[in-house]
Amino acid sequence: MTTLDASLKAHSRNGSSRSADRSDSASIGSSAIAQLRPRALRCKLCGAGFAAAPTAVCEECLGPLEAVDPDPSTLPTRAEISRRPHSIWRYKEWLPFDGEATLSLDTGFTPLVDAPGIARRLGVARCWIKNDSVSHPSLSFKDRVVATAINAAHSFGLDTVGCASTGNLANSVAAQAARAGMESWIFIPDSLERGKIAATQIFAPHLVRVRGNYDDVNRLCSMVADQFGWGIVNVNLRAYYGEGSKTIAFEIAEQLGWVLPTAVVAPMAGGSLISKLQRGFREFTEAGLVAGAPPRLYGAQASGCSPIVQMVHDGRDDVRPVVPNTIARSIAIGNPADGRFARAAITQTGGWAAAVSDSELIEGIKILAADTGIFTETAGGATVASALALSREGRFSPDDEVVLCITGNGLKTLEPIVETLDESPVIDAKLREVRALVNAA
Image (cartoon, rainbow, N blue to C red):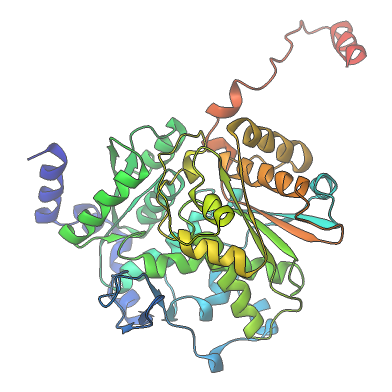
């Protein structure tokens, strides 16, 4: 028996000692289960229906499950939405629950920042940055999906959650589990950036580094979910977890005055985000809340791990796995679970996809910082650099209104940037030395 196996079995026998010791866990136990009811599920491929449960795979065809659509008669108006708190739960009718959430009520509604400098670079009429680098509580868009997943876990009576992660998800699960009084088990590739490891460890989860890449970690977590019955947010809770991404689309629509942009560029890892953006824009359109056609969706990846971009360029539905080789570890998923759905979202909306080199995405990070004051991680650099590449290809028109989705904070991944920055001058505390620098500048 390995050290990990022994530790897991001991934890399974002993139960969740940490959550039992926390005073806040009692207040969110039975009351949360009574107040919030996860919706039933259906298969995205064959349409088979299933009762609400911590499961994500169809028993009929092995396709992925998703929550059923909301009752149209329950949907709110713009005025009703505007009176609600600024979080993802202002759109609660479109999230996969009935009743009131009790956990992570302050996540979401991040800024939409006007970026005229980026617009000029892209040659478009307007550009905005959807800035999830300041998301609460862990500075990435993963806070949205964890907020829905952790509420699902509590509703199912689970006291332990976990994930397979390339970094941002690990941060968010550990943070949100800590404040909910839940036990967490976090599994990451052993080569992950030190900053993201520290930003997970600080919340005192059970953090496990796995030899291999993300796909190896994900396979392990599928077995862990089956063996221990925990809520692994991106495995057996995936049907509820993924719905949180739709709120980016909802917020963009509301923040633009209920008028849709013409194009949105987003990074792709597993592919879920861009497919959920499509669904979010479609749901608001069907509800009659927005003006304008659904935006064209554009996907961004690093060229060292771009299986979805290749699907789009080759016009095929099957994922051909690759071995990641890029500094953009947060989007380095070689076998994306939602690759076919991401490709469908891109092609159905008339969009496209681009992959950029590591040096290009580093330049994208610098451009975004210099033009907007927003410091993003490597995934955001890939988004900016891919948007510029798409512009050079003529994918945007001069009257386009474009949103770039920035999904994580640059303070988490300083390593790729530090060595590329110029060394600052060191001077004595004398005015003449400052004057010399000013004249030279």
